[in-house]
Amino acid sequence: MQYASETCDHAKNLVQGDRQKQHGDKYDNHLNIAVLWSAYLKLDISPDEVAVLFALAKIGRTLEGEYNPDDYIDAVGYVAIAHELKSKREDELEYERSKNTK
Image 1: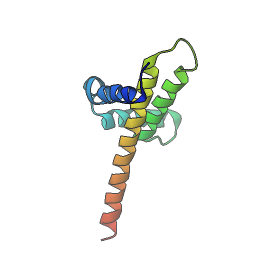
Image 2: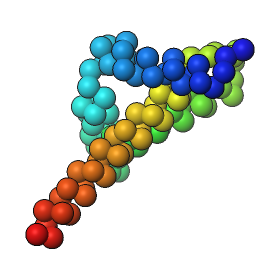
Image 3: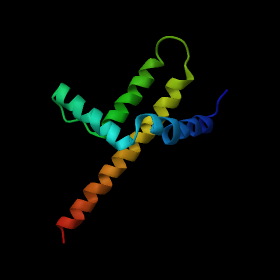
């Protein structure tokens, strides 16, 4: 059995370690994907939405086939990345709003 805290720790290590080294900066990576998906789908997709969609893909995988712990760990990691990217975007918007009110 793996406890929730262990799943979170494992996801944290992947997000900050191996995956960061393998895929590069989280924001840049998800921005690149967002630009490509937006063009292909003719929709405006943000980097944080890319991470949510990846999490949903991982969650969808839990419905078929054999149990794979990586699906759950990766979903946790993607949701955490989505939150990080969304909070970064909100901070930037707040900064722009504060500049415009001065």
